[in-house]
Amino acid sequence: MTDKDIETLATEEIENDPEREQAQIIITWFQHIQEIVKEQFPEYEVDGQIGNNPTYGPMFAFTLKKDEKSTACGFFLNEIMRNFQTNPNAGLWMSSFFVDLLRSEESHLLPNPPQSEDEAKELLDKHIVPYCAGAVRAEFPDQKIYVDLELHEEHGPVLEAGFVAVEDGNNTCALPLQYLMTLYLLNRDPAEPLIQAMYRLYEENNLGQ
Image (tube, rainbow, N blue to C red):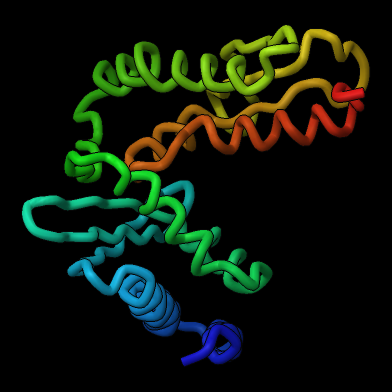
């Protein structure tokens, strides 16, 4: 089945709706993406699972197994759909996340989710937030970077970052801590979307000139 077939199927089934049809759309996408992962990594055994995040919707995770080593990485369905509908190299985009993890000699299973609010707070305060702040500052060594926690009216606690040199207009970006946590639990780099947003600010404000 081609990407276009899936898009057509999704559109037709959503129009007819019940929930059963929506579940079938998710399964269809999952099976399609799992086949792509298998094509990208033919020397590995590929397992997959479907999950759901109450905020960010359906998620897929795939595990590559070879000998005694296992490497897992997860994705949001909405980002998969967006990439496969707009990115001609979407398969390579997906495989790049696994390639980074496979460079390590160790297995990389999905992290265990925190089991309490205290565990979640400790993971954010001691690992995710300091890591993201350090990664952003390392990416722009020629700039003074502002990084702080803020409370957003709609999204709750967010990690906000910006360039000190930019005083007016669009001078900060922010991502919900819950989103950064979810990326971490999918074996994704939580700093990556923050760095991408900072690059947009960097270009918009001509900081490279």
